[in-house]
Image (cartoon, rainbow, N blue to C red; front, side, top):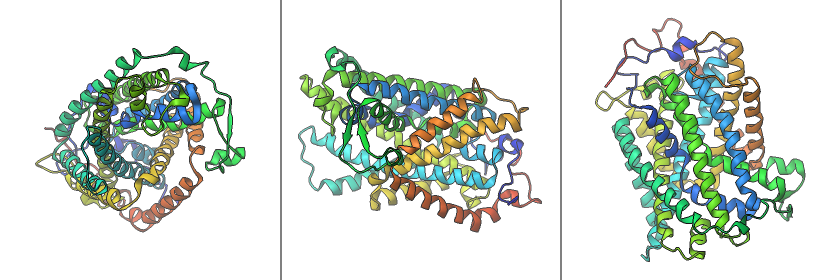
Length: 490
């Protein structure tokens, strides 16, 4: 038991990553981190989730749902900010758990992050292809063999973005700035044009009487309640759970800590600022969505586009399509970056083959692990029905959120002497609230999702016991330091 609970010393987690084979170059500035966060948090969902939840779950109260979700995610973000400022490492929650809870828990969190990021890249690539084909069709162009075209597009986008990440963080960063700027322009157009067509009567009093649904309970919470409900306060909080998933992604900013100048201060600011900006933008689009048409008339399939058509602004459909395609492109790009950094850290610690931690001398990136991630994403997107498994992405993320919130409380007690560039205010109250909020989001997931997640984690634990436990660098007391000396810079 003591072997699997061995903890990584904080000095090893925060020590200089040095040497050309196992270090990453500093490339990110504070503004870059905000763009990184917006790149992954704002995808095509910003144009649809408000309408979907208003029509089916919360009515005009979806505005309140966005506020509740934003607060829940902000609590988690504050916890990530403190641990990132204490341990600025590319491993993010995986490394935090390694230092605070021990190796087996670090592996479990790393395994959950693999589920989150790897599946997410495949899911978003498949959604990107479908939206791209739909955008082409909206210009009146007939797309023959649409399914085949989508398969080809999935392959092309994953190969292209994997190549960009493999070529270097600076290349990916330039591309990200351009695409994020363009999609923010599209979102700005949606907000400005939409505000000119608001009808205050559509907001009502933000409350729709609750309604019992004739469907069997599917989520953990519905099983305890004994029935499925929509609207009312239950619907508002239920919609908040779905909306919180749209905000997920700020945690990926933490994986860039090792490549950021003055990371203990820059990374917390980057995460918090990107989440605040994303929350404001989501709220603004939700306000436009609910204010343009009554929630009873919203088209669930294409809510925002149909709303603009209803008020006679048909050309905005193409703006929305462009924003959705760009939005999902940046999401895929940042997901690949985040997954690369997590696996790079796990490989550097020996829990997965250490060869994957090799940094290319030419491109100064972990090219080998990037190519592996891209290949796996292609296989999943092409041959697995990933769109039916989206909640697996969410549960992996929320599982990590729980450990990060608990980690703030435990680390304050065990290691109060460590330097912290950021401290969660009102600790341990706010981390405890973050833990409770995360649990609330998790019980709103389907029982089937929990079952698949349990199987994934059981398989992961088996992999650790067979391989990771024996190959861990901490299992080699006579081995040299985990990180060579000197820092590689570009």
